[in-house]
Image 1 (cartoon, helix red, strand yellow):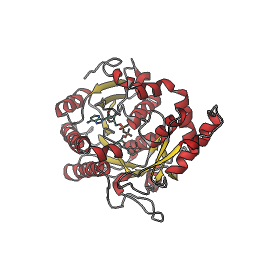
Image 2 (cartoon, rainbow, N blue to C red):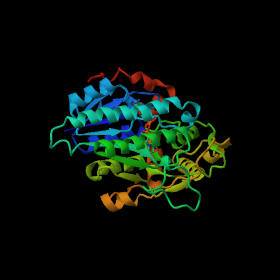
Image 3 (cartoon, rainbow, N blue to C red):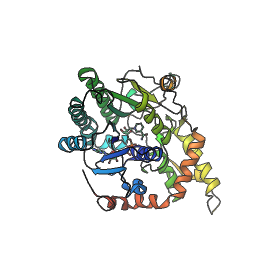
Image 4 (cartoon, helix red, strand yellow):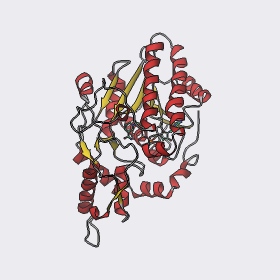
Length: 355
Ligand SMILES: NC(=O)c1ccc[n+]([C@@H]2O[C@H](COP(=O)([O-])OP(=O)(O)OC[C@H]3O[C@@H](n4cnc5c(N)ncnc54)[C@H](O)[C@@H]3O)[C@@H](O)[C@H]2O)c1
């Protein structure tokens, strides 16, 4: 048996591929364009492992996706491929529309063609799982109930609008063509192998290198943090037992203002890696101008996933953030490769591109 994962060299996709192959031997075809966010160094441990086939390519390349589906006959496709950084979407939304909307459309069409041709017993068992975000629901005020699956879509950034559009396409491909889809909408992830443009890895790495810890606005934007391996276990569970055509919200029950997150990281670093001059890491905090249209609060009601599929996160924020910081401290070579840009040289060097 085989699954096809797109975007499996990114933060969540990379963790998913590693976890998947830690749990079993089902082969993974990993299609990734290797944008700046794709990092084959994350998958270094799979070098030479024939359960993992890396393919350098674009979900928007219909010929390539058709060939991969025909050659490898996956029983499921899991779509992680996306442009994923809100700030980048504000400065240049074009790539977000291209990959998140047009790319997902292309993938759906290729998968539909493949699924249509499957023999009778394989057709109902096939799955297309689309990995999406809680940001499609817009923003909450302090006293609003967390987002559940019935909340209206009210995306506020080019990123979330492009993900919302992709969710709608996935939904329509089920209702119109019967494609057996599943969608997950997850809150903010953190954990190992996170590209240091996002808050948590940025703060850890800036703190260690003596730089400012930039906080947007007043730092009171609330996010519901989920340890990435909990997200991976939720996706595996939804793939295994989710009801076709349904969406599942995935969250950590860990709402925290950004400033609290940064204070927690600083306190753990003070303990694990105290500064030689005796000052505290939180002294490096610098407030910067807020992001335009910055959503104030996200929170996920993940009870449907718990009720229907028995999934709950294993990590609290306190346990997950400590593991994350320990990982960054213990994996300085990965960090060096990212911060120096050397990780880009892994393309075509460590992996043969193969169909
Ligand atoms: N990071 C989060 O907190 C979070 C939370 C909820 C949902 N999500 C969603 O999960 C998915 C993965 O997020 P992430 O944080 O790992 O993102 P990421 O930016 O770290 O990784 C995205 C990966 O997709 C690849 N990619 C981009 N365009 C591609 C294309 N056209 N064809 C093939 N590959 C392409 C990149 O090279 C990269 O490896 C995204 O769909 C994102 O919207 C992320």
